[in-house]
Figure 1 (tube, rainbow, N blue to C red):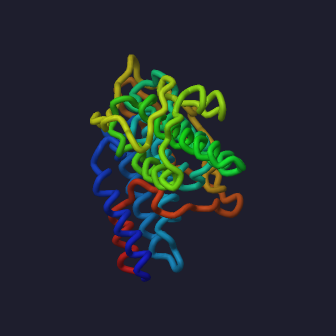
Figure 2 (cartoon, rainbow, N blue to C red):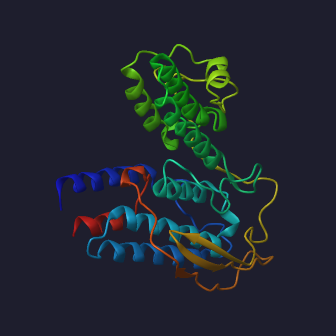
Amino acid sequence: MSGTFLVSVIALLSCYSVQAQNVTTPDPEGCIDPTAFVTCLSTANTTAIECANQPNATVTACEVQSLVDEMLCYYSSCWNKVYTCAYQYITSEYLLAIDRDHIQSAPFYPAPANSPDSCSCNLGNSLINATKNHDTLYTCWGMSNETLAHECQCCVYSAAVSASYGICPGTEKDILGVPTLVEEGQANIAANGSCDALTYDVCYGQFGIPTADNGTYVDVNNLPPNQTQTLSNTPGTSSLTSPPGGETMTVTFLNKTYTVTAAPYQANGTAASTAPATSTPTGAAMRIYPEGFLGSISTALIIAFLLL
């Protein structure tokens, strides 16, 4: 194993140690069928380890498939928790991994406003807003006027970072990947000076770059004090009592089609055993980005790679 790859794996392990055992970790408690959910997650983890042991396997490809398998577990046996931080976080990881520059939608993502048992921060809205603004960099880079190009980049990074402040006020920014955007922005802006023109008239009026933070454009070189609230799930006024995707739903991930049967809801809070999800390959796999974009990974999966 090369030194570079080993460093990447160690970096992933560090990320996992921060994220594990918190509200972004799948939890069977309260699921419509907790027993089936645990079994499903265990199967997903076993599959990921088997994937890692295949010749020429990459930790990223195996982890992305593991994320898909975990999402499918929610659809079948924990559909009443698809608006929680854990599902929304897993889906965010998956979407970032398959195409960082063009975040797509996914089932139940982003969570609708006032969803039952939803995350205190709408991770989907925050991520989509940030990446859409980040995409505007291509427009900035195409400008022939260096001053305007610099002001445009300032607005882009400001709006991308401001998304988390406006959509998730008070939430700890380390959870949302803001430091990565800040670091990238500081590095790109440093060569051309400071950002003195971060106003609504300039950023939106001149460049059409909106901000989700009530008209405020934060300076990546002079950020407001870091927020301290951790993610949490809010119960809402009611709970889901029917599968939001229907009794049977068909989804496509990584060019594979999956048909999932949702566990039925019962008034006493239990559910009958459900049939496992099935998949049919329909084409080549999507491009996969480097593992640095993933925020967590199974410890067992990392160990499997270390032993190769």
